[in-house]
Length: 172
Image (cartoon, rainbow, N blue to C red):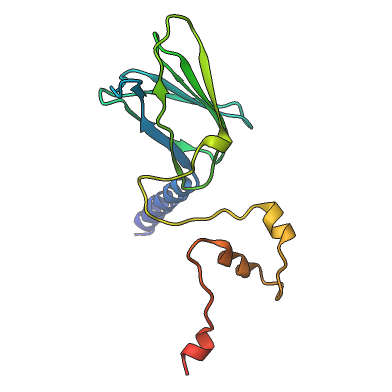
């Protein structure tokens, strides 16, 4: 009886740990097209974490779609390559926890090997797969913003759509 209970506890804890690992990651996805809006199959997409130098690669499917999952949050350089096209590089793309960054490049035909670089400031961090609203409060914001009551939970009001209400008065 005790052995069965221990095995059940072990299996349950493994499921919980797997759920935590998934929740602490990010992903990159998109569709690769050429200048005529035709999809580009078998394009190679490589995401390289600038802090760890770890790389993950995938290729687009027959519909030009790709997805790289389970990426650690951080800053990445993303390369999109296909023979016969100019290479597209997204430089310094920041990924946060739970984010699915959409990068859908347009490849330009080229007889010579060339690279087009897109800087992170030009990449819009919009998750097309999820309607959830999220916000990352950066260290500079925490240091620069006055917290009247010195309550760090007031920082939630920096999120889009967040409103403050007095729940004590609503209960009367």
